[in-house]
Length: 121
Image (tube, rainbow, N blue to C red; front, side, top):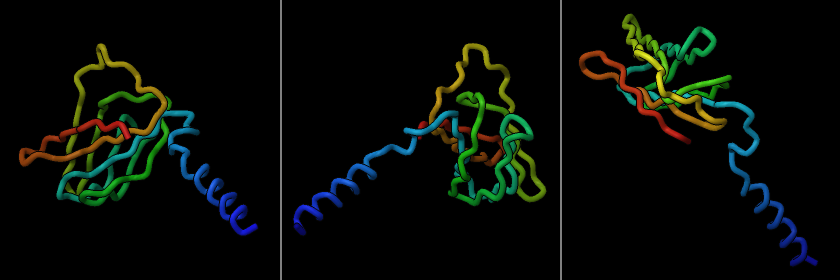
């Protein structure tokens, strides 16, 4: 009896632990990783609808839903009194991202330029 109960519990735990975190997604989910030594007080991505706040150095934000997103985007970072901007020139040839989990890994150079590394989670 104990053996049967153990096997049943093991199977339940195994089946629950095998699901991917992106199995139930219905939209693009995007988060920010701060790879700089600064704390990002505010990160605006694309427009005022997508604002991430208080992303510490080497930390991640929570995911936010997007109706559509691209491998890169307009980004405005505020850290203290300083503002840093990444302004894409155009999106010609760029395709919308499929439903999934993504990260914009952001850093700032010594010259104050925003560097974006796109990561598929």
